[in-house]
Length: 349
Image 1 (cartoon, one colour):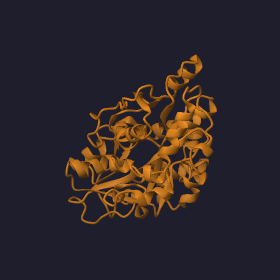
Image 2 (image 1 turned 90 degrees about the vertical axis):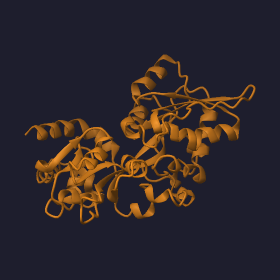
Image 3 (image 1 turned 45 degrees about the horizontal axis):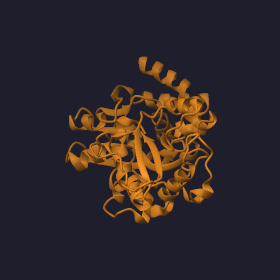
Image 4 (image 1 turned 60 degrees about the vertical axis):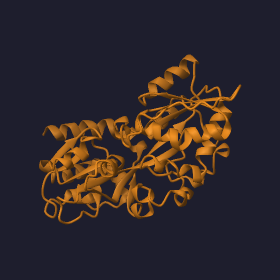
């Protein structure tokens, strides 16, 4: 997950990020994660409880999420970490490069218990976040019912904001143009499908305000510069909960994405790393992260354990998972460079 999206989400960034039980001769486990409020939430939900339960000395490091840092450790044979949090695309790249180990799920959990796309060969999912639509309830007289309403300028006139990138926008464009969710990436994988997506974006191009950073969507709504915006769900929920903004989230046709954790090749404490992964994959444990940051569990069996006051804020709440698209990182890994060039050329027209 992009660090901009997780920073200051729940004001947890100041939380202590090292937990070391004072146990003589304690075993040690080291994790490297991408910092900010997100890592603070991981610390509170999982790292600290695991350390207390096992007596293992749990060390934490931070990095910016780049594969290069992990690769450099592996290539030099100096791997001081046992676990690393990664984006899904990084898992695929790291697996192909031989930087991350192929996981033995018999030591973690039944692979079929994970949501589709969250139990990969070299990485296991840890949370689900949503690309959603948000609006100010004091501005719009009628509530949008789908993310795809961003394309309806007759019913919802005014400026709207979208992320300045092809990913998500092209998928939503095809969905708004009538492509079934199950066929989105098949259609987008053809030249005709790409043309169709850009033609749909053309219909609202003059009404779009583009955003780059996760903090911008709530700012654009608060300043009333736009009547609606695509956004990462955590940013909007934070504005609702902590800034008392009169915002609402539209979940129908959200695009869900995942954060993951992996074991770098050459990790010295492999057994402890698996012990932690198995712990975090217990449904009751998996459900705890949402208490500290509004992202959902990757285990289908975890939902009943999510606190009732937390569940309505999560992308994985049953009411929010009626119509959704899972972001296809393999598609973007294969086609992203070309589509970014096409998108940038389209913006310049």
